[in-house]
Length: 188
Image (cartoon, rainbow, N blue to C red):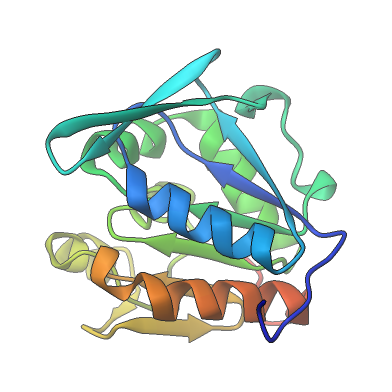
């Protein structure tokens, strides 16, 4: 059981085909174990294909189309990584809007590995402290973020981590930030 109770909190997990499976399943389980209700949001319908690195993994059922999703219906947002997943989401206007709305509402947002790519296109990283998979460092710095190579970085409700190796620290901070709720400094 988590040290933080997030019972009654709805957490959107935004992803599509190509998601790094462990970056979905591990935080998903952490949210459930802490009492939260995870919801899979995607621009894809039906199910999405997870990956373990370059190998196909499991499929996951989509609960809600991102075009119909509203940040006001959720307490937090989690963005798993995976190159293909993140590259597709970053150019999706509904995904950009959905992510930006969490920042405007001051709600916790967590992104791991390639997940922060969407935050660049949602125009919410300028002046923010964060980390990501190392290949995104230049993109994030060019968008005005303060990138650092750390296991987990927390900035006013924004939680970021680098790789699956960081999942234990990432999951703990995700649950902690959700339990804390809204952050005044978490605005777009």
